[in-house]
Structures are given as structure tokens and as C-alpha cells.
Image (cartoon, rainbow, N blue to C red; front, side, top):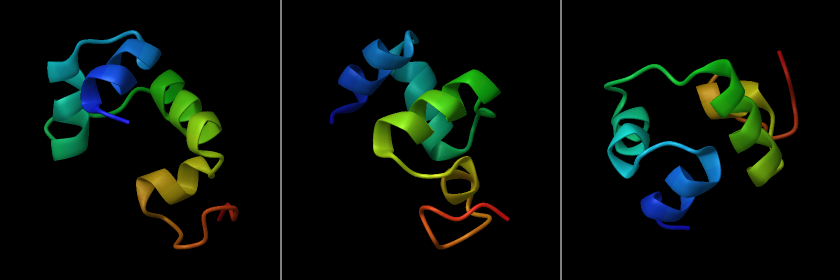
Length: 57
């Protein structure tokens, strides 16, 4: 998916999404949950807390 498509899915601008990816802006909880569902991985995996996409710590 392109940033533009993800931003549209998340209901934010492409620039805001880019800032999430670059670590220049904290990702709100509701966005983390949407990304987790979209990619079928745990929020812990997105946050880098675990290397296992299905495991929560």
C-alpha cells in the first residue's frame, strides 16, 4: 500500500502518516488499532515491543 492509500484508510493526510513512519509524530491509539487490524498483527509488534507479529507482551 502507498502512504496516500494508508492515509485515506486511516482518515488522515499523507503528510501526517509520513510523520508516523518517520517517528516525528506519535501514533494515536485508534490508528495503532486500525493498523493492527489491517495487517493482522499485534499492536506490540507495530510498536517494536515483540518480534512475533501475533504475540503480545
